[in-house]
Image 1 (cartoon, rainbow, N blue to C red):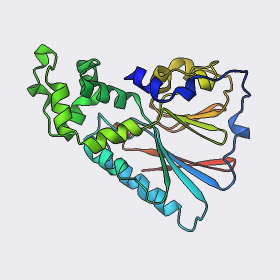
Image 2 (image 1 turned 135 degrees about the vertical axis):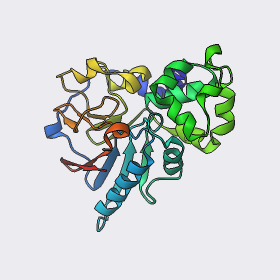
Image 3 (image 1 turned 180 degrees about the horizontal axis):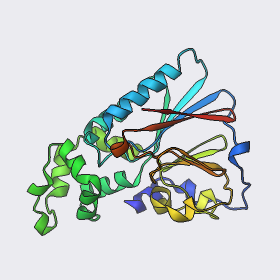
Image 4 (image 1 turned 90 degrees about the vertical axis):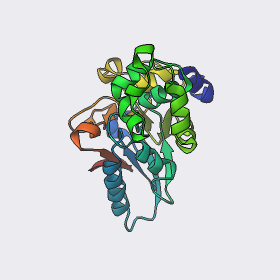
Length: 261
């Protein structure tokens, strides 16, 4: 699945030259553009509905360009993966440009559907909740024999529209001086040479880095109690599936603010 991601976005991995860097204090969105970015949803359709309603209310009277970015990890852990994918696949906010990104949990789900990957690792990392949302009891899939029917059952039960949506999700989205990505980036590696494995799965080397990057990175993946604002990144995974708090970041001009469920 990771190899497929690399093949789908070849332009991301072919840059050269020494890039400039920027800090949050100097970062800006293009004039006239407002971007809302939602953190890891993890099967919480109720919280997603609340955040989308808050965004719609926040947009009252606004007539500029608007984009919505979602950072991946729509599936697993929470109870309503199927409903979350219904909402996102249908277009969450009519009339607003939508940029959905892929997270490591979508990679695991799609791998399981293809019959590759570690089924038990996925199921014990929240995949059981995704199966339940499609009416599948994982205990009926012969776990003692390595879940031989898992891929076939997922292909039958998971709507094609959900699969198509997940396959459309990008690894990154850039706007102004910001890069949106599920997990983060490998410090010291130009953005054009980042590996998909890092973009969907990195933690400590990125989280611990004090150095500036080519863009300020907006990410999820690593849970924080409240949004984590640093000079080189903003982390907005507030553990919605367990905390009941789904965070949305709003970026406009040189400013930023937060909405929450």
